[in-house]
Image (cartoon, rainbow, N blue to C red; front, side, top):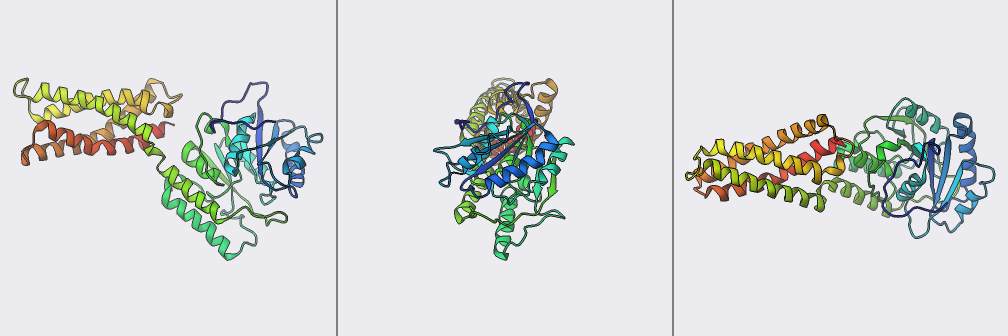
Length: 387
């Protein structure tokens, strides 16, 4: 089987005739001493439970020890097995996504190729998926779980990484007890259509942050000691983990999205300024400044919502086109921007009445001051929540 290329985006299953229940990806690199035993264990566990309704996809990063060749040797015996040998691309998390891209299952899963994840836990994870959860995670930090005979320094490093994740991404990392876990199942429709950008080993953090699964379940497991091969954990791995956290933390500040938001905001400024002039200028209607500002800003907000919903955040509202969904988003947008409007109006009056500034210059400064407020909160609470 050829390795896919291009964006790390998972599509729909190919056709109803090809859809199966579970696709389990095994990412490997230099695991020739473990892969055969693991695949046989997996088959012994999954055959009785799922029959022909599952597949195993080994994604090997062109291992020097020819892990891919050891896996291919089992193809005649295992009808549900597929092997991908990647060349020119490496990394555990991207290997997982590449495997999911060719998968046919409604549920996508991953297990390490080094026998440190006990295969029998797959049945407990599968049971959670059958009960309707969106994401099932095998956790070392639940009662009944553990880390075998890890040295104190390794326990400290693992917990330190978790604490770091909670500090940088509390809303995502804090949803599970073991965010460092690489043993999980997730529904295809949770990740489908979302472009992923994992870095390093921690695919779960990527899923929690970018895909925002609604229902999450955890099952305990004891992390086994490695009997063959060598650990892939190095200082570089933890450096990539930190870079990944920061990338996810500031993903909402993507320049292209903010530029769209700012462009829409400029159109709102035109609406706001024109109406403020028409309503408040002594040569026009001559209404009071505050009343004129409130009405001008409200119509500018309606203008901004329409364009932001269709263009700036359109990728986050895919499939949420009904009028009820739009109304919910508009009410959230209105609430956030109304708070921003209150700040805007106070700043406008302070500059105009106390500092004697020109009303239009004062209005422009007040608008600029609340742009960041509106962008950040609407991304997090209005359109990100829609996804």
